[in-house]
Image 1: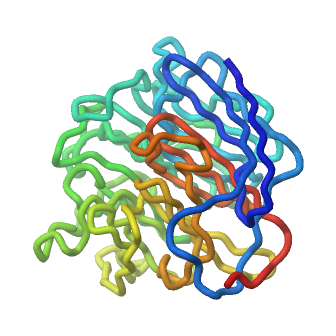
Image 2: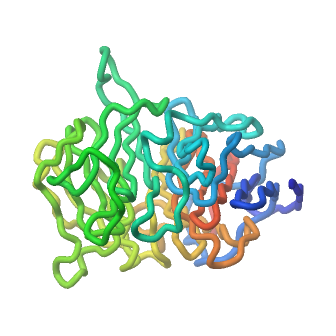
Length: 379
């Protein structure tokens, strides 16, 4: 069933499409209207947002259902990737790719889903399985000269993967760090990984165990655990708790942990040649529970970040602090017409053009906000 709704607005923020998929009913709703809610933006030079003139409606994957959307990525060709649970046990797809210039086309199912995860559903509880975060990295090619793009996957079922952009698995690891197995494992309270990231040109990966031990584990790009872990439960849990994601912030040359329980972004200094270095730098409060942080530099050199929160608000900001550097707030719950408690933005990412795509956990919603080409001062 498909329903098309269009509303005009002259607000500076707008969302130009939403894909809503649930296990029983697939309904695509196109909405064009402004965002409201959240803290007022600071007087900063900011990008102006407006709705897109064209009406683009992305399609769901063929023979696939998206009850829960998790991680997003954008490659150098501006193609958008989504990890999700698939309740269709025949297909077991869990990674799809759109061309961001044409969301009206059905996305391509990427790779062999069953190699990435047992993508046949679950409730999100322990003893089920789930894909989760993905992160793109540019590295020396495995089988040729030059640089290639790869995806690092952190799955709740204790499965860690490195793939190329077509989903071909280069390595896979299962089980607890230092005690790996050769098969998928049920998540447990001591290890339920959520996200990878790495410093450019580094041999080391940092893995956030967001739903398990609240530790950051260090691997190398070949998937070998380095016997190094940073414990978020130290100092009575004030270091970080539920580190849902870890992200390399190229603007400051630091790692930032999305400390969801403590509602903070926590910055750390690292050394790309010494994986034992993980030194606290600063903490930045967030109005809500942050799930990830992404970054974008405009053609004019403006450097922005976006952080989605479980409460349904997504903050676009400059600097480190989403409050003092706030550019704008996207009210995902209102813009998508979602019921509070069934929104849960889990990831948000910039396209190469500066648009923002948001994926929500419950129930499988994906939304797109288009960036205009002008610059204004927002007061």
